[in-house]
Amino acid sequence: MSNFMAKFLIPSGRRTPKISVCMPVYNTRPDHLRKCIESILNQTFSDFELLILNDSPDNKELDAIVKSYKDPRIIYRKNKKNLGISASRNKLLDMARGEYIAVHDHDDRSYPERFARQAAFLDENPHYGAVSSDYTGEFQDGETKDYVYIEHNNVGIKRMFYQCCAFLHPACMLRKSVLDEHGLRYEAAYSPAEDYRLFTRMAEFTLFEILPEFLLVYANHDTNTHKMQWKRGRDLIDEIAFQFRNKFPFCATERNLEELSKKIDTLTGIVPS
Image (tube, rainbow, N blue to C red):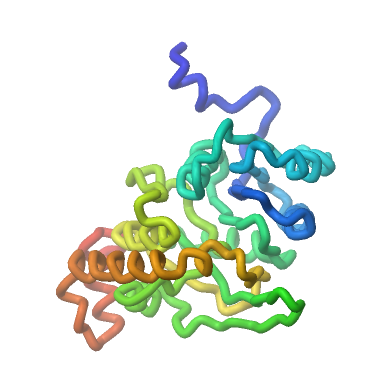
C-alpha cells in the first residue's frame, strides 16, 4: 500500500464523527484557549472530533493546556515550524474526517447549541454548503455587544459578496464534500482575507445561510489578525470583490435580488433552473 493511500485510512477504533472542529492555535492567550476548548467540549451536540493544530511549536504552555483535557475527542498536532494561518487551516481540513467542518478560532467561544443548530440546518438543506450565524462581540474591557447581519439568506449574502465578506468565518460550518469535490482550500496569497476568497469560490457551487441567532462569542481585541493587518486586508477585500463581480458581470447591477441569486445558482448548477 502506498504512503499516499495509507495517510487517508481511519485508525482502528476511531469512529467517523459527524463534525470535525478545525482549530489552529498560535501563541494563544492561556485564558482564551481554555475558555475556547471548554465551550467546544460543552456542546449539546457531542458527535465531533476537535482537531487542534499548534502553529507556534515552541510554545510549551499551549501543549500543557491542551493535554490537560482528557477528552478522547481531542486530536492535537504541532507543526514542525510556523506555516501560517492558511496552510494550517488546510492541514486541518486534510485531517478532518467529519461530514461537516466547524471552523473555530482559538480565542472565540461557541454557545452550547451552535453545533446542534448548524448541523441540523445542513442535514435539512442538502443544497447548502455553508451556514454561519449572528454573534456577540466581546471586547478587552469585558464589555459585550450583539451583532446582527443585514443579510441572512443566500440571496442577500451573495449580493453582499460583490462588496465584502458578509459571512462570519469563525462562526461557520461547512459541508466538507463541497470543498473536496471542487478542490477548494484556503489560499495564503489572500491572507488575512483568505476566508472571503474561499467563500466567493464556494459561491459557484453551493448556497449560503446565516442563522438569525447568536451562536458565537467573538473575541474583539487589538491582536486580532484582521486588525493587525487591516491595510492589507482592505486591499485584498477590494481585489476579491472585483474578481467576483467579473465572474458574474451580468449580476453586478441587478436590482432584483431573487433574480441575482437565481442567475448565479442556475449558471453553476446548484439548483435546477
